[in-house]
Length: 117
Image (tube, rainbow, N blue to C red; front, side, top):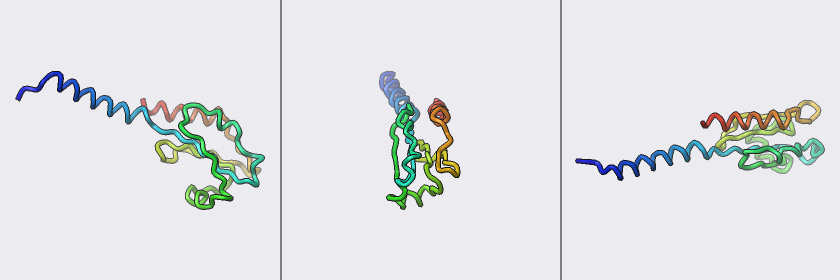
């Protein structure tokens, strides 16, 4: 059986597109877990992070299921997810203030994205 070059090329392009789709569409989500009673320590610069698909805020005082699910022991806690999997968390210190900087978290996000290439 002789393969048609056009058909072979079409199959090759489809395979290439599938591979590229899997690589280039990693979903990066950043979630800040905090509580209303600690709102003075909300991380306001989180919205300035780039190359993030979604930034979420969860109040663990109102959503205790999320607190248990993600094992949040101190607030605020910032968790970086890639394709739904927790990759890294940044936690507050004993003063309930986060010490991680915007630059530090952005560099981590950039590293995650570069791993796909």
